[in-house]
Length: 132
Length: 106
Image (tube, rainbow over all chains, first blue to last red; front, side, top):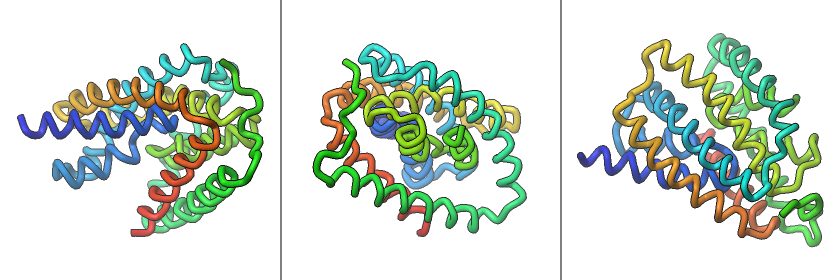
């Protein structure tokens, strides 16, 4: 019973971040399950992916209603993302997980600094093209 | 296209890289980039869960409750996003990326 409530609360927190930021919530689901529910890393990733689907569907429906989804871009990018997902998963298995994680870490730091810098700059061109 | 490739490489956290790429290469606004990224995540996550499922790596007892919480949270998250100014959304997202990035080095 306790685990159910904890899982629900992790879902709420991850779903909120995932729906707001457009990321699905896996970055919160996985570590939270490992730490709070003592779930094994691999099983946590599986449960996270399952939850990401419901999170992404509900979030997308809400975003669609607010006209915050560019459907042609989804149709163009989603098939490529799925295909490369399988391919990259295969490649990732051949590589050292720790090395892979460091590489992504560097990319993420760059994107984070770039995003924060852009937000802090006055008059960043983020308002153009906003619909609704 | 580039967004798809990087998202595939990152697997679970694909959306985090998708948003900046959608803005830069598809020229989407901050809000539309987040909404569009989440729609793409449905398909990437769907493909991911099938491969985990086939390998018996999904703990459904946890997954079901996590999904219910996630769906509720996503609804409120999406509403909140729509109310944020583009710059605030970008700042929150940047800070979130930074936390995820730092975690990768720990």
